[in-house]
Image (cartoon, rainbow, N blue to C red; front, top):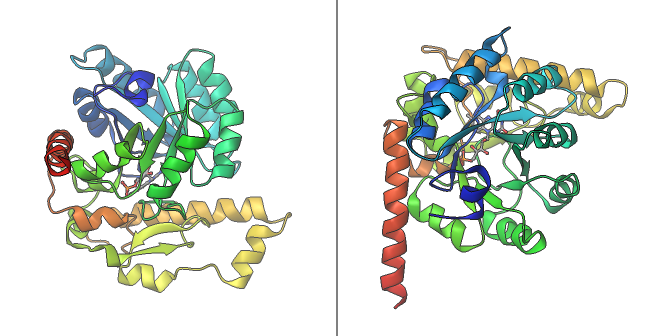
Length: 333
Ligand SMILES: Cc1cc2nc3c(=O)[nH]c(=O)nc-3n(C[C@H](O)[C@H](O)[C@H](O)COP(=O)(O)O)c2cc1C
């Protein structure tokens, strides 16, 4: 399959294994690359001294051994509240990471530095205003994050957001993110103008993901009606499975939390604190036997019925996309 995404980042199949905090790991990245797609991980998964350097060196080595066109990329939270942002960007540039996904803030610095050695930067966007800013800064593509996506889901449906971005920025590839877990879903996104898809939640229920079996089983057993949005993890609404613990911590910030996160004197420190304590809760929840179950997942849990390897997930998506294309061709005749 050839699309503006496959050409831009040099992959065989227009799919990104989406970066997922605490879930993405080296084995998943290697599997993605070997299946001809782009495996992406958040640099925040490697916070200890030297860890990020290490994994990047290994992935660069794996990339040289590939027999197919696959790649890897990193996700940087480009917000002032991410204390590791500048340090991680420096390491990534030194290791010549081929592909970046920026989220939450201004991608200016990432774009400048990545472009200095020919790497590509795609920006997470949930609306036209942020997309315009990223476009003006020279991004290479958009990851359009729609309703129901795992993590910081956007407010708009992909059926509107994708064509809106595609029409407004016709020469910038738009990647669909949110709710895609099948080949037919992927094909529908290509039909409305997406250059590829970014798939997260489906890969939590993979044998390689480093999360507890309880979390993986919850992905399989949950229905879309079990997914709720909470502001309690990072300050920005995020989708989680509505476990008893999620109910206990609640969904909305109270008046004091809202005041602290908007007041110009307190907002930076307070947001940092919320994010660090949210990260700690999430981290505790990926371990087996933890009762404080705070599990990020998108509405595509509805479509996920098994825990299989990343290779099976990707090869199945490829087959299903072809099959959906064939069936549609027959139906529309
Ligand atoms: C468990 C989990 C963790 C995530 N962590 C991040 C992250 O650290 N950074 C980021 O930009 N997006 C993150 N996301 C969002 C994904 O990169 C992607 O946009 C989303 O999963 C796509 O929607 P889907 O889950 O419906 O496939 C996360 C999603 C999930 C499910």
